[in-house]
Amino acid sequence: MARKWNEAQAVKHLYPNLKYMTAHDERVREDHAKLDGIVRPIDDPFWDTHYPPNGWRCRCTVRSTRDEATKLKDIPEVPIHKHFKHNVGKIGQIFDEKQHPYFKYINECDDDNAKAVLSKKCRKLYEIIEKTKIKFPFYKTVKKTKKGYLKISLWAKNAGDFKQNYELGLILAEKYKIKLPPYVNLTGYKNPDFYIDNYQMYFDASIERKTKNVRNYIRNAFSDKYNKGKQLYNFNKSGLILQISKDELEDALIKINGELKARKKCLYIILKIDKQLITINRNDDLKLLYDKIKKQTK
Image 1 (cartoon, rainbow, N blue to C red):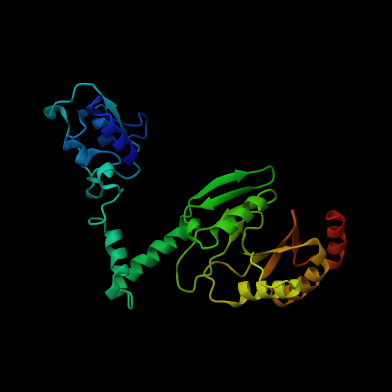
Image 2 (cartoon, rainbow, N blue to C red):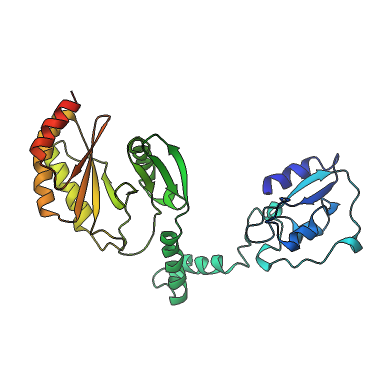
């Protein structure tokens, strides 16, 4: 809507007025329906308070026009919530940072005098906001395949390793139903990399290898994912994604077998061997699985 405002300003010498338009369906609220068809000059104060969006989930819009302006006496009085009583095209924001309480408390958190010890009010609000991300992750499907999909939470992009997880998720979606969960910034919270609907559990991915030795790589991966910090999500049932080469398979399975015996929380391993994806259940006979995988990876 800010872009529409700028476009309308650019052509106001040709189309000096704006027309208010609703979505014209059964979901339009009564107050906004009263504004449908209202025409006023683009620089009229009317648009300082009524320019859409002017309410929660507002889908209204405007159109540049030469139509005759609606007389002031014919414009109905419609209450506009105080947090929407402005023109997003003029201020370049959906909410006014000086008015909305969210910004007030966030700014309080960022203030130099409050960094050392956050106020109780600010800290509580911040925790509520972060925990809300878990309850309302807002997933969007970005890839769909015959066997799976990749869905990304609205809040996932804040993660530092988002790009790596996204690229791996595109590959995993060929076989699994993958979700990139929200990134939550809470003390003691261990953010998982993936949620796989096939197994109804979280998975972490050990993407970065700091050692060429595959056994050390697997040992470090298990240690990193299962030894550090508290987990506020259900980490008692989880999985791990490892990336190895075909030549490392035998050593990798030997080490995985030992780690699975020591780490009862890990129920599944997904092995990415070059372009192939192999699922390992902790109850699998890894000797039989080795022969099977060798045949598949020839």
